[in-house]
Length: 148
Image (cartoon, rainbow, N blue to C red):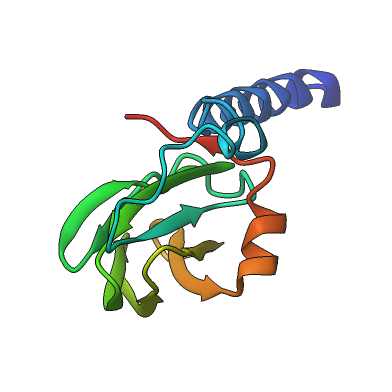
């Protein structure tokens, strides 16, 4: 077989995988577009934004849980939001392993949780970590609202 005949199937596989990955990214309006039109934070609650600022591992879309309740899916280049009671909460995302972290929600304020994706043995790992407001506000700008 010639070099060109071997290269064609490889290129088609790469293009197909890329298309599948992009199709798995969030596709709603960007945070920058909707942030001013979101409903006000409910009285006595704080708003939690969970986001992935890259498309790396886009095909992996695990459920995001806060205190063992599903609040949405973590998607490449996507974000979700949920209002929660003030205080300490456990956020968890299960892929090969259940990755957990503690977040602190303040009444009337946003809390930002960045999901960092790392390669795993069988599937990518999605690790949730609370970040400061300035970092979260900057990194979430181009993320798209994740729908089901």
